[in-house]
Amino acid sequence: MSEHDEDFAAMFEASLKARQFERGQIVKGTIVAFGQEVAFVDVGGKSEAQIDLAELKDAEGDIEVSVGDRIEAMVLSTSGGIVLSRKGVRNAATQRELEDAFQAGFAVEGKVEKVVKGGYEVRIARERAFCPLSQIDIARTADPAVHEGKTYTFRIIEYRDGGKSIVVSRRKYLEDEQRAHAAALRKSIVPGAVLTGRVASVLDFGAFVDLGSGIQGLLHVSEMTWSRAATPHSIVAVGDQITVKVLRVDEATEKISLGLKQLQDDPWTTVASTYEVGQVRKGRVTRVAAFGAFVELEPGVEALAHASTFAPTGRTEAWAKSVPAGTTGMFEILSIDTAQKRIGVQLLDEGSSRAADPSSPEAATPDAGSTGSLGSLADKLRGALKDR
Image (cartoon, rainbow, N blue to C red):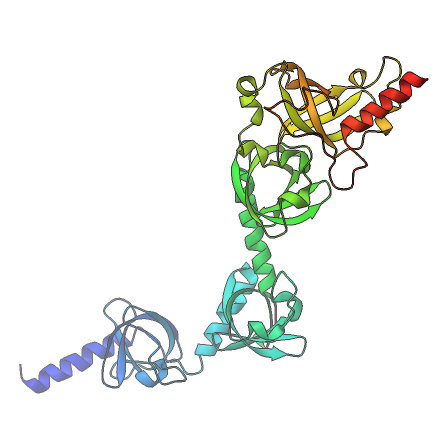
């Protein structure tokens, strides 16, 4: 066979392959190679088409596809082979994809081009969309310009007039993601779980801790530390990263109770080996009730000085008004019940030899703002009661 016959046979075979397609038909193919001026596209079977390289370049003149990429184009000619063109169909294809994404609720990627009246101009592929100012983020944006030039993921919330009017929302996408993450996170929030969170707010009764995805738990002041005298503001601050333990989860209300002290050693575990009856220790009154005064001997170890140790039986009401919380003094241990976590103590007179014991040499002293020591107040009270 002559060279002329071979050329004719090749052209005839290409013509047969081209007959499978029609001019104006939209086809999809895979880039298989690049030539000097054209790219070769596999459009199925044994058919191979060509497309001008100029149609595969971006605004900067760089080829924006690679071997193996899929493209969509229109059949421009079938004479002597298949010639493709993306002119006139590229935008249409993008619009169809955006419309499909709108109908299906799929997310799309777009670049925030600039701030415009009421929101932002967003570029998605070669299409222009509008994102309202309130839809750019979950949190309020103080400076709208911070989003310019950023590439985000959006949801299409409006698609009208064949793609001439497209409205997108990043906020909706973030909220959807947050809900999905929250559902997965809630499965891991079970009693006993140890989690890391951020302190979102601090109130008089405790702190709310953000565990992620908008889920918050309450860390009550009673669960922060073993010491009853502590206040929430003295332990945590807004923004602190802390590790907490999940104590309870109310499935009905979705309320989560957290603990901090549960991750610390319980000071009562050493009471049996370090405390004994007859021992004298310095203590601080944390609160006063009608039946006695609660005394903190160390953080987390609280004792009770019963009212009967302050005044004669039957005259227990007057003393409660005279002993200020926050006053320190020397206390003798009368009883220890480690099982019930109870210690009974009595206040020693300021001038007693027991109060000045070498093992506990510090005399009773008031805290700043208190009206006097427990010893002096108790002495005055006892004297007043005896005079009656």
